[in-house]
Amino acid sequence: MLDISYASPKPKVIAGATGDWELVIGMEIHAQVASNAKLFSGASTQVGAEPNSNVAFVDAAMPGMLPVINEFCVEQAVRSGLGLKAQINLRSAFDRKNYFYPDLPQGYQISQLYHPIVGEGEVIVEMGPGVARRVRIERIHLEQDAGKSIHDMDPNMSFVDFNRTGVALMEIVSRPDIRGPEEAAAYVAKLRQILRYLGTCDGNMQNGNLRADVNVSVCRPGDYEKYQASQDFSHLGTRCEIKNMNSLRFIQAAIEYEARRQIAILEDGGKVDQETRLYDPDKGETRSMRSKEEAHDYRYFPCPDLLPLEIEQAWVDDIAASMPELPDAKKARFMADFGLTDYDANVLTAEVDNAAFFEAVAKGRDGKQAANWIINELFGRLNKDGKGVADSPLSPAQIGGVLDLIASGEITTKMAKDLFEILWNEGGDPAEQAARHGMKQVTDTGEIERALDALIAANPEQVEKAKVNAKLAGWFTGQVLKATGGKANPAVVNQMVAAKLGL
Ligand code: ADP
Ligand code: MG
Image 1 (cartoon, rainbow, N blue to C red):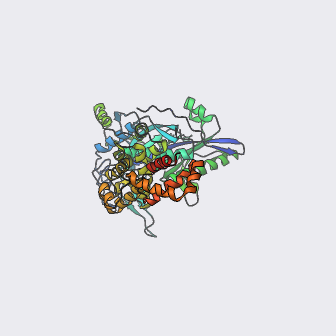
Image 2 (cartoon, helix red, strand yellow; image 1 turned 90 degrees about the horizontal axis):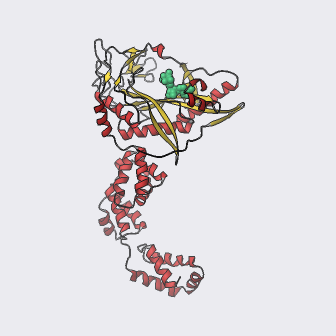
Image 3 (cartoon, rainbow, N blue to C red; image 1 turned 90 degrees about the vertical axis):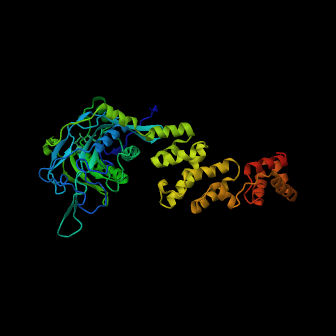
């Protein structure tokens, strides 16, 4: 368990004509469950398949078809809940949320309103070293995704693709504990990171694999504290919900715009209508989509096709026992065990693949040096080629081999950078490649001494200057390194210069 006490960041404050306003944000995140089959059918979830090719009879809502729960999707929801330190409900139940839409052949969505599978949990969102916002999670429920209507393929017709119909989603609902646009983006990023570590959602936001409904309201300073003390929502302002956001940048811009829109209304003496809005990235505005619907508008009722879902504590315990190390724990361990800075630890734990790569290199070596090489050289080089560590031409063993050659004094840091480039292009064993390319640090002090003696003899004025100002001795070091073609160890040369000049 982590024991880190964080300071709480300040909420975002917007100055209005009538005084200050604070932002209050709560999010509903739809995360597609990483599963090969749908929530209630065996149809494939593969993206990019021929339209309407991954549709079982139950997905198409053929009469008489019955949904059958996919145990793997349930396991993924439980695993996600455990990752958010949440309560797992051993008994949950599915409800029908009724509405008509062309991409919803059933005429209802199977969801969990009254008895979700996961209850209260939390996400710690770091906003800087030692500063974090604790965002409470209210619930996670399992539900079906809808299909896709396609309006831009023909001027006179619309099409519908049911491939996505019935794919499992986890809806992760936060409390209104997010206090500004940056925190909102950081919250989504952190949640995505946790789900990716767990392997329960791919988190590909461009594909809509993870998308957020963002609820925004504004209040006066002090009101939020009253809400926190009482959990009474009447201390908060009326919220608007911005639907289906799948970009961290747009989430921030939409919140900023929406808060200012609400403040303008309130300062004008008006009141905010509770409604669902859409963000238009081209205009940078939100616009009204529909007035807010309530649960009763959907005529929710328990789905008669599905028995309540009962799971056993022993099964939950098994899942808990197989949990991977999560980002916060990994970051703390990297800082403690490898002496990494907060920044380096953040970079190296952002993606679980990066962390594994680093650890393979750092094991039994200088962790700080390994971190520098991976962040500066490897990531720098991968970024240039638009690659991730998964397709890195260099293996951890190769980078480790380069570091070992530096540590044993066989090559200089400068040579190591050249060797890195050679290995990147040609592959091979680091020691063999270094030998083949004549990379060998001069450790023969005789050769260094000869070069230095010649320099001293030829430059008496430089010797006098260095004796007055020791800093100028660096000139000799530079010249020796040059004379030995960069193969001498600078530290050894420095020592020898100081000894010869009597500094
Ligand atoms: P619904 O199911 O009708 O959308 P919920 O009460 O479940 O409503 O809330 C949905 C989301 O709105 C939650 O993430 C919640 O934290 C957030 N929320 C509720 N009240 C506010 C508010 N005043 N300001 C900002 N967000 C809010
Ligand atoms: Mg909602």
